[in-house]
Length: 519
Image 1 (tube, rainbow, N blue to C red):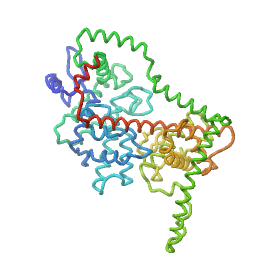
Image 2: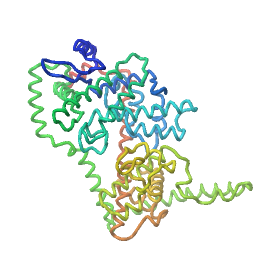
Image 3: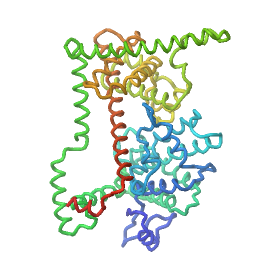
Image 4: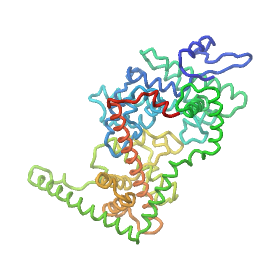
């Protein structure tokens, strides 16, 4: 049995005799295991943490470092936790009701980003703040693992914690560890969230032991929450113009409609979002491959003009810098020598995210072309230890696997590929604001990063037909990802500004009239 944490349900649970020690009850001759709806427990934990600190294993966990992480990523072209927005860290009344926002805060990406920023000392003002930030990051990572274990959807999932309960997965061990860990949490807010989380974990483990004895081989734990039921009820209400209390006749008619729509709607994965992605790539490739036509010549001229303008500006800046250095006789001349890009910058969350993306691009290349030569050239997958500061984010984002307990199944990019991607980011950032609204934007930025790479890294660009296609694949993928996410962030900023203007305007429409307008 599954239910939410409402007061009426809490009262019914007491009457049924369900306790933390025994999360089950008897109905006739049947043993019924019990658990609360897991996603709503995590929403309750998020809402409690916003206003109250927790103590976990003797360390303070706070909401403040999550706000600081969001502020740190603001305006950056590369984000380690791209889904973390103001709606997540400063939710308003309606946003506090959304389970999705709560779960995305307690994600592995947010935890890894916060831990990396803490080690880089980009978060907090003093050592005490760093300790709190590290504890908060660990709290997010641990909660994410528990949520994955309670929300398994496929036995073949690449995430080892989302494979469901079975003899061959680590989920059962992780849930047993979670019981011990949750018992260390001290919460003075009187919220029942952690107690209910313990009841849910123990109830699922009890159900698993009972089913296992009857020959059941695995459980997909996502089937043990209320998501499907709530989505269905939401669909019924929406069909009535957001009517909160549809009649029985309306429900029956809407159920009939739901059956027809389900038969007509294509399966998940073939919706318009996926079609748009394929359309963008197909058009993009056709532009890039047409190297002899008028279109390609126009793009090349645009790129040459841009480099001519910006290189002149950079040369002016460099000559000013050179004059400043030579006029200072105490300056050590060795400091002006060129060093590799990987040694120039101090570790930062943004830089380490770029290394993670470089590894992801190597993964996409290998997944598409299966070229052993390129994969060996662009990755360091025999790397078994954390030996540079730039590897920190990779380490915290990785799930332990058979390949490595340090970086899991993630690809560690070689210095060559990492420096290539850093150069691509540098030229892309310089050009994007000026050229964000031009026609044929994909082809323009591909030509831009290609020319930059050829100029700075001649060893990267191999001119045989086979490997030339593979290098194009890396740069095409880079440009596609940049345009996709930057367009997404810009659109979101525009929507947020419109919403803020609407909220601050004097005349606001009546919510009841808005519902009536939907009928």
